[in-house]
Image 1 (tube, rainbow, N blue to C red):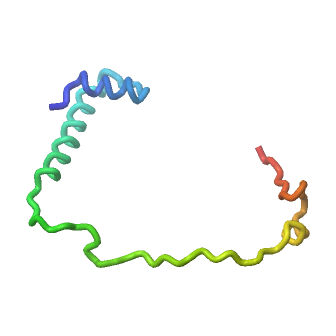
Image 2: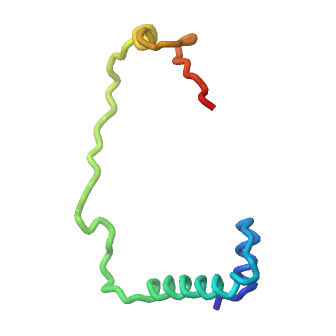
Image 3: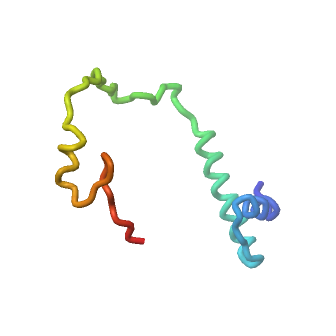
Length: 92
């Protein structure tokens, strides 16, 4: 059972302000959420595992190192550049 004190404690831990006139409604809503979670936890299952029900698997490949462009080649089209890096404007 969720109490007003529980909601107040959660609000304090979350650094949220809860007005006194909202407390009853929030307590009721929180209890409904907890009841729903309990209903899901207590739902019967057939004992079957639900992991990988579609028999999917990841396809991994080896990482292959390939030659890359030099920093000079990469930066030649940059409007502004520093020492081996792009310069970007701060629009703040």
